[in-house]
Image (tube, rainbow, N blue to C red; front, side, top):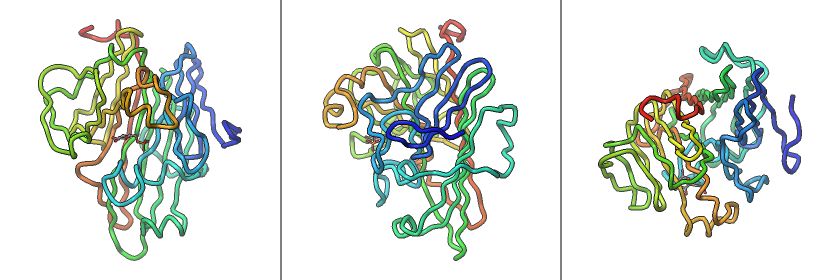
Length: 296
Ligand code: BG6
């Protein structure tokens, strides 16, 4: 059932039997809320988020497609995050997520105007599902429906904003020793040294060829987010910190302390699809008490 969210924008609420929930806006195909079975919000959403096209919603899970950030000639992060998606009532069978009954299928097809800025016909199907344990699963399927025989290439990210208690007490495991492109240093390539990633300043890095599992440990909240991903080799880690935060109209000056973006992505090697071909990118998020994690 579709209901009205902020500013009358349409959204869908998913509820799972044990109490977890999620909210998905048709504007952007954008998950804005994910709560565990205690009703605790797990995603960061800015108190200054502007729920008004064409500004993308600040927080939750924006979809970056067909371009990540400014890695190309399109608008920042592509246009999928500021288009109105439709509910897909008749999706082709998904191979996974079949055990979940709390899910919604959305679809985005380009308009004629979209095809003036990105001259390709595509179908982007997004399934958002809640698992029985409250896990949040996003599956994207993008198909080239060009009738002119032309392939297309794109970059992609699930730009997830996690809610954290204090960014200074957070660490990310799974990215140690990897190569990354540093967006704060002309996208130059470096290699991460040493231990888990911790935060004490602005960060904007694209880690390359990352493992399928990444963990965000929130020491103060005693909570660990586990990301599992498929088809998404890269992982962006972003926090604007204080100075950049002040330049963002839709982000509170102090909010950087309570968020961290870890974005499952395909950036370094763009995905290329021939007509008729389909790509799939999957993200599964769980939030578990830290005491249940090994090595804590
Ligand atoms: C991150 C990028 O993914 O998104 C950053 O790596 C960017 O460079 C950030 O600043 C936020 O982008 P936007 O367009 O939502 O303000």
